[in-house]
Image: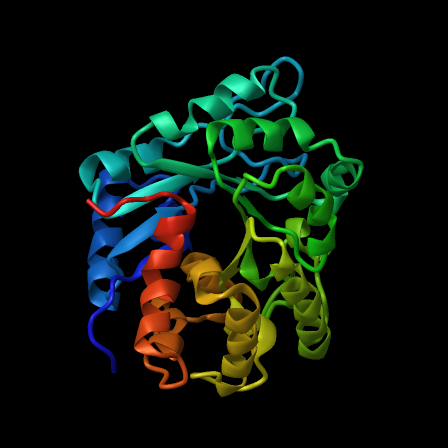
Amino acid sequence: MIDRVEIVDAQVHLNQLVADWRTAPLDAVIATGVQAMDAVGIDVALIAESRGFDAKMRPALGPELPNGAIRAEFPFSERAVALHPSRFGYLVRVDLKDPELRRIVSEVRGKPGALCMRIVPLPDTGEVASLERGEFDPLFAAAEESGVPVFCWLPGRSHVLIPYLKKFPKLRFILDHCGVGVAPPHTGQIAPTLASSMTPTVAERVAQLDQVLALAQYPNLALKWSHAPSLLSDQPYPHPDVLPLLRRALEAYGVERVMWASDYTQARNETGTSWSECLYYLLDSNEVSPEEKEWLFGKSARTALRWPAT
């Protein structure tokens, strides 16, 4: 073990923590979340509020505007921050088609606990093709202008971000989930929103990681190290075959640009992994130095998101 470092979980769908999350009172779910975090040893969490997708594979986060855009709302995240401002921050989703996109983005950082945005472009909806055509320029331009970092879920297609990394050098991008494709589910059927992003084998996903590491040449890109055990490992907990890959990521990006996240509720649903297992396969490892753990588990996220400790 190491001396105590701050543990910042850079992504967890905390609103989905309990079985009856769609109907449970917000305060009860938040209280359960705090108890679970205390039990596991998580000091701070970045909430990625998610309520699934609608029939058109759009995030079911708010009302539909006349032009078809979704104006997302984040009541759970706002309540969690109000109750525990030192324990939580959250990310937002902004629809590229929102007619008031620039205003919406400019107001993100002015809301308590709102730190960043996330994009989850799906091939099925045409969003990946739109990204490839350069049509995300207005969103990223507004984010750069307002200093709003952007998490990007681009499984196995991280290369499509290259033109934007060049065009918006002052914008902090963070590549989600090691940047590699989705793994087949251990049980049941893969979700429709994930099926078109699946990469069948560990070997293929490790090969995709090579492409992700090549992007470290762009200083405005950081890497979220999450789901590595399910995506990049052939071995059971504590997944020793993941550590050499993490070492390569740290050498490519520098530990200041690699942040840990559990994405716990997804890991639980897809592989039965516990929140503790998501954390301690790395926290207990002797192959990562105490100084590296300080960055990996807290300082990298706080730096990239300009998230001061309170």
